[in-house]
Length: 376
Image (cartoon, rainbow, N blue to C red; front, side):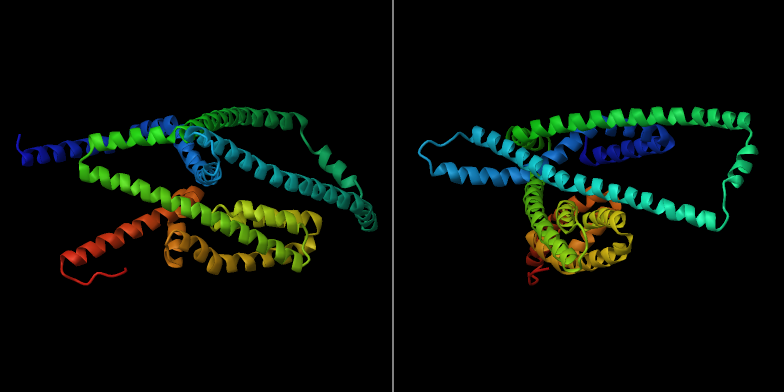
């Protein structure tokens, strides 16, 4: 069969398949949803393994330098396993610190709130007596209530509520199962990623043209390096922002300075949006302790957040992946609009790779056309 005939046949078959899919679009979407739910633990496990591998590589480099100075060096496999264990210990240690700071402060705030309510009850009763607001009006309302009708409405509400509760329980169980499988898969991928990477490379080179396979493997390699630099820069930026928040809360005499600093540093791993999550929690805690300080808390937080977004974040994270502040903001905006928090995290290193490849392509085209190549 001639090449042109094959192309025409491929176009025809593709058109027929797309037409059939459009006609049966609900069934196609339902089938796609089932496929996504089936592979979701694998996707989530791969993403989690990618996050774990960044600090794990840093710890592995430290262990390699440490044991290279020893006469009896550990095997690469043992260092790999040891670096994984130390990474998990570090993550658990950070979580314990955050929870140790967060839970007691929230408990104390709730206790203070109940104390304020309890102390204000006598004043409320005095106010009601002063304005002659007795409980007679409540008895009048209760006497007009039809008990039988109220019970029927209550039972009808239960008939609506119970299926929703069952659906919620089913969703919760499915989430727990998916999360458990994702964690297990991420552990297997992290511990055996070298062999998985080799097998993936072989499959790509076996089933794709040499030019395509080399470009795809190069793209994945560039993305991993860019993501490693991005996550490292993000952690550095999180420490800076947490320190700034602690200093600002201390200078402005706002409560929970230590807690806000740690909470902001943890949430700042999420680009741009993480600080606003910690801001909401901080304002809530401040309101529970002293509602009059809530406005000051919001103003201080927004000022520090504005300075961080405009000057610190693009400088620290953008330069770590080789992006200008403009491209960093664009990548975060597009990723957030399309895929939420995960999109924000992945689109910045992805944008760095795209910009780098575009620069190479422009430079090659200018050289081929006889133009002057330069930085784009």
